[in-house]
Length: 140
Image (cartoon, rainbow, N blue to C red):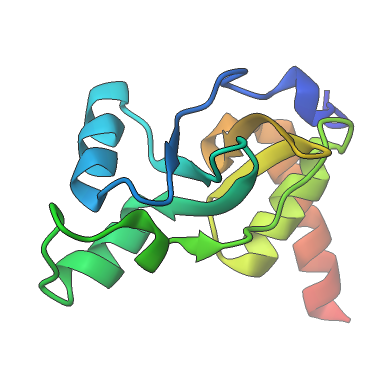
């Protein structure tokens, strides 16, 4: 089980996406209604260009007192977020998220968005393996 591929884990085969021009307020409402922590931002052709998380909204909109109803996602999104292919392993995603300090990872196959995983999607065995690896490198 600790060697699961991401295509076995992907929560949303049709993840929530919004265009670059959508407002932060629209994203917030979708995140609330769907009970999700991230929105994938896409070009009109459906290609992934960014990611917006609740953390982005707090640090880039609320903390700066920007108007959520007037602020487009393209001004606050993480541009070209790290991605993995669906054939990658769970531990690879966990490593990247830990190293990069983020909790959401888009899964793409070429230009096609397959889904998104969050750190909460992984099993205890996968987390334990990462903790073991991290501990190994810390003692060296």
